[in-house]
Length: 239
Ligand SMILES: Nc1ncnc2c1ncn2[C@@H]1O[C@H](COP(=O)(O)OP(=O)(O)OP(=O)(O)O)[C@@H](O)[C@H]1O
Ligand SMILES: O=c1ccn([C@@H]2O[C@H](COP(=O)(O)O)[C@@H](O)[C@H]2O)c(=O)[nH]1
Ligand SMILES: [Mg+2]
Image (cartoon, rainbow, N blue to C red; front, top):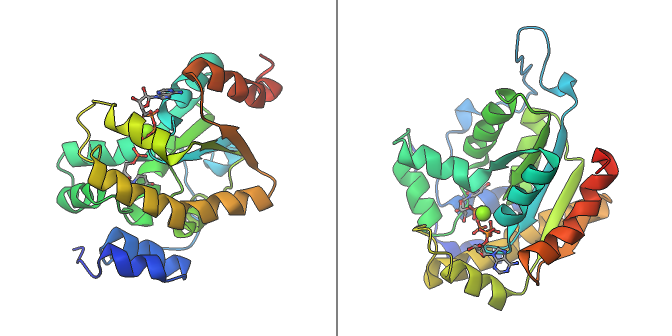
């Protein structure tokens, strides 16, 4: 059972990534079910997921920066499998899965769902996919997310895209999105922007230092932005 342990504001003043992430979710996690050992991840009885040597792209950026829009174009042009972490969580909520109400509240408040939950959902989707090229959109949101992915999946991303967009533009896009999302309102957007700045920017910084970051100016039309994305994948796809 998840239990509310803190409010958002004290979270913002602490600097420890692990407790930050847990507190950002607003819930205590059932740590007992969390193993840090790399699982065998056997897909068909013979090949582990890791042995498939998948090409993994993390797609990061603030709320409304255009991650989903650009992922769609990458899928159409380069045939990747698109996994939106937020979408996977929304699907869990819609299917009334265990903890759906905690997930819904977390999303309404712009906080972060525990890593274990999100990584398991991503893992299931990757393992059951026929594709070997993945766009993981909106994940990792925190340093703890990043570490949990590396430990559970046993892999790092090949490339990390970062859609860099001014806050004013992101707010405008989110408020005009009109897709009925519970977090597309000004109060939640303000919280999501804060969470992005405090928890997600350190992840972006980490990948920048590892030489994996492709920073893209996300201002312009959707097509203009895609023309900056295209060369990143053309190099490996021959298109
Ligand atoms: N370059 C652009 N110019 C104007 N509007 C855009 C652009 N790219 C996307 N949009 C629109 O902005 C909204 C947000 O885009 P999108 O859903 O792709 O963002 P996102 O980064 O996935 O956001 P979130 O993190 O909230 O899921 C959508 O309504 C989309 O149609
Ligand atoms: O790894 C993740 C991804 C998302 N969330 C929660 O979902 C919402 C919406 O995510 P989008 O990527 O914008 O669709 C996000 O604000 C978080 O509350 C998450 O917890 N962990
Ligand atoms: Mg999105």
